[in-house]
Image (cartoon, rainbow, N blue to C red):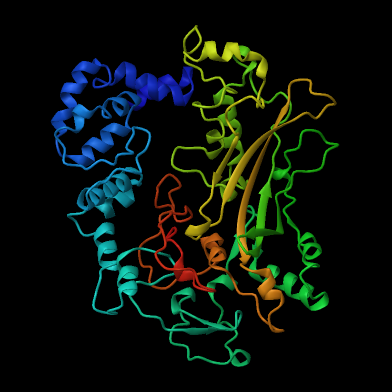
Length: 498
C-alpha cells in the first residue's frame, strides 16, 4: 500500500492520491453500493467498527448514513443526526473508551504503542492508575478532578500543599514549582528563597528557535509604565512601546529588497472580552512567497502541491511557523485555508490528461483570480482554544502586489499569529492597590516552551520527542476543564503535552 501511494503522489496531489487509491485499489470501495449496503449491516452492534468504517472514505460515509445500516444497532440517534454532524452521536461509554484507545494508538509512534497495549502494563495502565478515584477527598469536584485529566500543572494524586512564590508574591500548589521546592516552609515575600520561583517565572514563550519572551520582560515593562504614568488611558502607548523581534536572516522572506524585513515579532495589545479588557501577547510572523513562486495550472490556478511545498518550507527548523501554529499529524493548517469543498483557488492534480471533475466549475469561474473575493473560502484558519487553557492561533492568507497596479503574478502573504493572555483585567490591575504584582496567567503556563522550564512534579511518564507522534511533548492536547477559572489557578487548564 505504501509503495502504491508513493507512486500516486508522484503524479498527483496527495489529497487526490488517497481518493484515487481507495477507488482503484481498495477492494471494499470498489464494490457496488448495493452490495455494500448488504455487507454493512453485518457489523451489527459493533459501534466502534461502524464509526471507524464510516470515517475511512466518502463512499462509506454516505452509505452508513442509510437507515438500513442502523436497523440492527442499539445506538440511539439524535433527531438532528446527519452524516455531516458527528457531535450528536450517543456512543455508549464503554465503546467510547475503546474508540479513544484505538485513535490514540493510530497516532502514536512505535515506542509509545509499546506502552499503550492495554492487557500489558504500560502507558494506558499507568494513566488509569494515575487518575484513579480514591478516598483522598470526599468532595465531588475533587473526585472529578482525580477522574479526568485536566492540566499538566495539576497533580491528581496529592492534595494542595501551597508554597510561596517570591516572584508572584502568592502561594501556589507545589506542582507548579520545579523539583526541590516541595516542602519548603511558607515564608513572607521579603524572606523568600532566591530560587523559590514558580514555573511561570522560569519558562519563556518562544517566538522562534532563537528568541523567546520571558514573564519578567512583560511584567517589568507593564509595571514600570504603571509607576510612571498611572491610569488606564495611557496603556495604549505602553503596549505600543513593547516590541521583541528576531532578526535572524532566515526569517526575512520579503518580496523585494526595498520592502521592510519580515522579522517575527512579539507585541502587546488589548482585547475586549465581555465587560473586561485583557492584555494579550501577540506573536506574529508574515512571510512572503515572492513573485512567481507558484507554478500555474489550468485556468491560471496555482497547483496545490506547489503551495503545500511552500508551507512546508515555512516549517523548517528555526522558522516560527511550527511554533506559532503547530501542525497536526499529516495535516498542514495552512491548507485548511483552501478547503476544496468551498475554495476554487487551487488546482489539484489528478494525474490524468483531462481535468478533474471540478474542472468545469473552475472554467466557469476562471476570471475570478487567485484569492478572489467571490471565492467561498475564507482563506483563514483559526484554532481558538482560549477557554481550554491555550490561546487562539490563526493563520491567514492574502495577496500582495509588489509592483504598482494589480498585474499578475501576485505574492502570497501568510500571517501566523499566536495570542497569549498576560492580564485578565487591565482595569482591575491598574486601579488596584499600589505594588500589586502581575502574576503569570494560566494561559501563559501552557504557552511556555517545555524545554525552557523544569518538568512539573508528579509527571513520571516518559517524554516523547517524535514529531510525528500524537504524544510529542510540545504538541498541545485539548481536554476540557471541569473547574471554573480563578484568578490564578494553573490547575484549571486542560492537559497539554506531558
